[in-house]
Amino acid sequence: MSKDEILEGQRLKTIAHGAGLTFIGSVVGYGLKYILSIVLARFLGAQMVGLYFLGQTITNLAATISRAGLDNGVLKFIPSYQVHGQEEKVKVVVVETLGFTFGVSILISTIIFVTKSWVARFFEVPGLVKIIPFFAIALPFVNLMTVAAALAKAFKRIDYSVIPVNIVQPLLNLLAISLFFLLGFRIFGALVAYILSLVLTSFLSLFYIRRLSPGKYTRKGFLQIGSLVIYSLPLLLVSFLNFITMWIDTLMLGFFKGAFEVGIYNAAVKTATLSSFILVSFNAIFAPTISELYSKGDMKELGRLFQTVTRWIVVFTWPMFLFILLFSKDIMLLFGKEFGIGSTALTLLALGQLVNSAVGSVGYLLVMTGWQKLMMINTLGICFLNILLNYFLVPRYSIDGAAAATGFSNALFNIVMLIEVAIILRVQPYNVKFLKPLLSGVVASLIVLLLNSIVPAFDSVIVFQAIFFIAIYMRIMLAMRLENEDKVIIESVLRKLIIRGGSIG
Image (tube, rainbow, N blue to C red; front, top):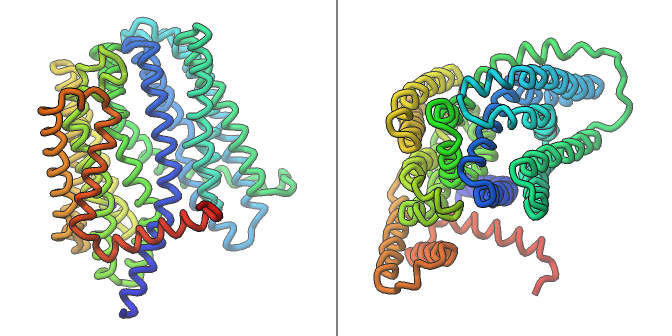
């Protein structure tokens, strides 16, 4: 085995290990949030759950603005101070970031509370005025939790970031909501449960940050917030554009249609984006590898890793898309009978997510290789396109129009970046090895469709169908033989499980 092959294998193991850590937290978090969405929809119905999601979206927009990009800024300042041994300045950044964010959040929460009637009239959604005050109370704690998670990442403690946000908060929220629903409370119980889960998680996050930066905090030298805000404000623009791109469909539906449509649409969104944690998991660890290889000028190795990582992402996301395509209506009915009309929207959104996953880490390839301005232009352009498409399609086609606008914008955004990466960096993610997962998925789909047509009882339980479909897909994949790089990731994961299992067996 050559030196280059050994180094490539080591990098693949690093990516597999790092992605695995993020993957576990993401799976649990997305799973809990998805179950929570089903519980909310089942107990509240489309109209009330639509109010809940619309209020949450408005609050998240306010939270993005009130953080002023500081959750991204600390990722630069804290590591920089640590490298130079300036621990006092690290403490300054921690205290001032949390204090500034909490103070601005209180101010914006007050403004939201005072203007709640105007906001409700703007959307012309009955009942929204009663929902907004609860989310205004939640706003400061949303930001405390988010900024504390960013601080944990800056300290290179991903576990302290993932556990509170991805596991503790959704789990507490789910437990509290279930308890309130059992006691007979409906929307009031859901709102109080949300606030309680955020308050408790915020305290846990602050406890973690205190452990990461122990010692005495003084007021000496508390002069960093100005520099931090100046640095972070451009990042606020990026965060704001990303938020608008992600949530303009929900806001437009609330404005042009109503809470009922928002409720059904958000059920489709949460289902379609279930697969996104796979891309996020691999991006989290592949991003620094991109920077490392590009700085060394090793574009050949970067291209090979790009192809391998993208194929791994497709291996996991392709069957999820196919299953949604086959059973979109059955999946939507999990939320309740009235949600069945969202099946077309679910398919359109899932298609956009598939393109997002199928192009791999193209966004990070641009950012990590010095093309941030081009990325900003891309984001700005797609944001305006998404707004325009939603503006024209939502009034005419309702939830299907919102899904078409968002799905198309998402797909076009990623295709444009894929072309830019191919032209600028001369790398592309595809090779003949992609045929294995693609063919495996198609064959598995045909087998499931055949069983559906000849075995009437087969389509009675959606969970059973999902397990059977994945089992068939994986069996076909294995029958086609694994690639060498696939063996690397599987061996790495199995070794990790065996070590952690210890005495098991």
